[in-house]
Image 1 (cartoon, rainbow over the protein chains, first blue to last red):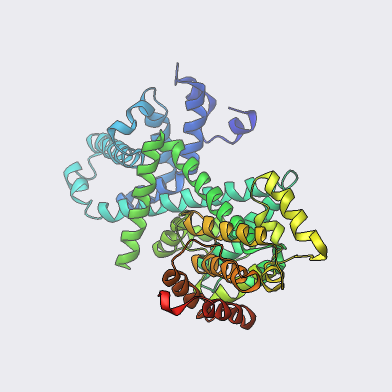
Image 2 (image 1 turned 120 degrees about the vertical axis):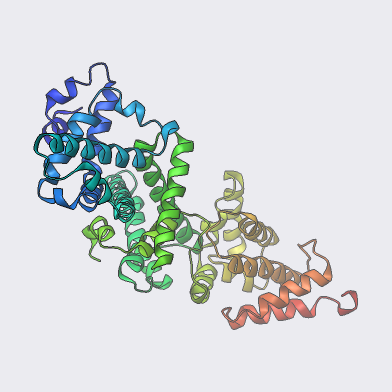
Length: 245
Length: 175
């Protein structure tokens, strides 16, 4: 992990030391993953346990330190045991129930049975978590794609055009609900020499987007087959919610 | 959406828009709308022949350059090629191959209708300008293809006239 990453880590360095023999790659990976997916975790936590709204950050911090950073947690999140996303949700839910249970024993403000009975909204919370997860994945994908395209400008000047073409032709219509920039304007704007040139540029943009999307997902889903399954799962999820309106 | 807001916009987007964004990664999704075919065809006809056909092997690319500059023809665009009174047959054949390769290529970003018209127009130009058949298609199939191309609303009048002349050169009796 770089010094910059250490400085921006949400976890104290000592927590990483507790990982013992955990591979160096796993430290950086976990740190990056948890920082990246903090928002969906918080949404799930607050939606599932509304009474913890005010202490959500603290609970999540404890969850990260007591569970995620413990040796072996990442291995238990292996693909063979289910999707990483689901494993994370289940871990958080169980962690909070356990925490409340311990508090219950000490102070008995409310019974654990009652708390568990008060989780009818868990399905909705789970869906909101998944949707925020998709948003996080896509936002990170776009951020990386933009950086990638713009950073390459020196070596490949046309690569910076690829991001711009992708943005005005595909992103703006999706986000703003407007018609795409007409083909003739694209020719002028990007100095396109032929329809093949235009199509290749747009296809390149789509491929770069897809590559970064796969990379972002692969960082938590694992090997290629699991990544492909997770991409499909996320696509199915948003389609299902979109159809429901 | 201003330029720096693409990631932020994701967090404000509905599931429907997220689904559309995820679909963006699919290479099979159509790149261009049907209402853009006229503009794309105009661009195709005015595009430098060397740009599109230059994608063939280096030897062919050199040959192309020679051909397009030979005899003072100065064939800069596909329109120049198709409407020249005596276009080099090799260039017409290469254009046909380029179109066919794109028609058959599942990941070609060019609209199938555009490359299909390019395909039939190269055959028509050889037929009309050079009285030469560069296609193995049967008369009936070729006639059907030329008629289809001629009927596309987005092609220019000059190309339409060329396609019509080609159709007239195909014997009806053989249909």
